[in-house]
Length: 173
Image (cartoon, rainbow, N blue to C red; front, side, top):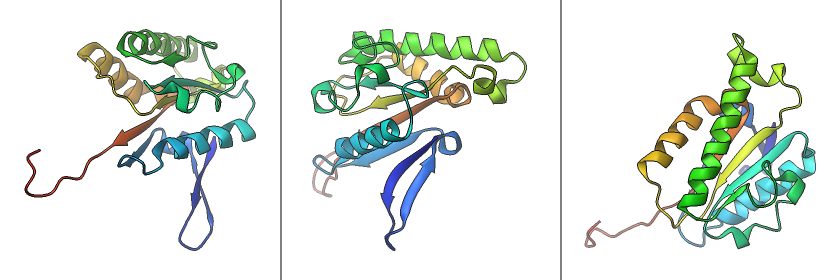
């Protein structure tokens, strides 16, 4: 599943295949365009692939920033269940994703490297973590770690948007 990443310094289009890179980290300071970049990825995926090929799960306390970018039919678990706006919803949605991942792995049996080929009807799942002001507890971190380790083999990919802050030498971290 190819996604458009932009243009390189020579003006050539740059793409990535999520089957090769598995997960993606978008890092930058406040106002640097992380959410806009994720929106561009969403638009590109929707333009290229039908809802039977890809579904999104969105984790953000600022859901309103991108809610119009993901049509209902592209929300993997339906309109409301595919969006987590707080820690409780994030825990529940991650449980749903883990259950789907385990189902796909179980259906694949011995051929775990080709999980999606055993279930042609299973769309890729793109989990978007953007602008998260809520903190993850240990249970959520354990679920994320399991998805990071095994999810890409089951057609589940994570896009993290991470805000970083640069501090001067005089400031305490």
